[in-house]
Image 1 (spheres, rainbow, N blue to C red):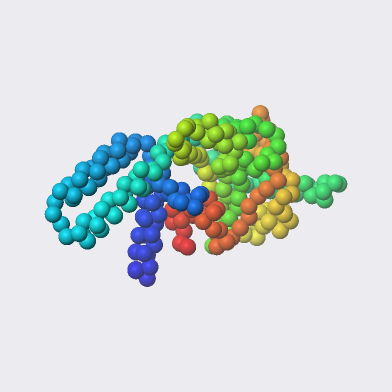
Image 2: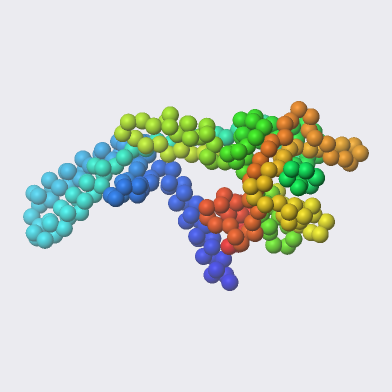
Length: 285
């Protein structure tokens, strides 16, 4: 048991370190011949390494060594030199997704799920975030709306919403901006320079909060009726003095068509919620 925990800690450490290294060194496998991409800040270092390799090669030719040793060293030096000669220098570009000026997760009380009769589609689905007060709710929901460029419809799924079922009768609600938003792609295109490639680093906020999943949870009914691809309204709500839910004044409801609903065990490394669970929530694989 202790060895298993130690293994997971070591694996987590290696993964995080490897991702940090990825900011500066990458191997491009897009073509048949792999290319080494290195951050431009190491450009001078690479040039000096090449000069040193040339000097070492000259030195070996002067020193009297057995022919087979000289041959092996020469082959190694030539191989290293060829790799470094074909290095593509890259530069990091930071893209910051919209963030709220201030937000306390304690103000996020829960989720609202609605099922209203609709003559055309049978049911009209409503999903909302419930906040303790109107001011903090407006601050955050205005930020979320910016992820969709303040549009009333989100056909491209710029706002990612997911409900992940956890062990122990709980579910995690995730709300975060998509990494494929048009402005990100536009920034990547503008950042290209001759002879270099860009390493786009996207910074953004991932909202996550765990809520109870029991017989009294409206999410249980929502999960039963909702099918991904069905239209629904997403909005911000707050609880007034009479303990009633009201729409946050000045915010627009956003029409969406996609929600990810999965068990934690169904997530893969391609799901952002998977990494968040491992590294932020310390959920075991």
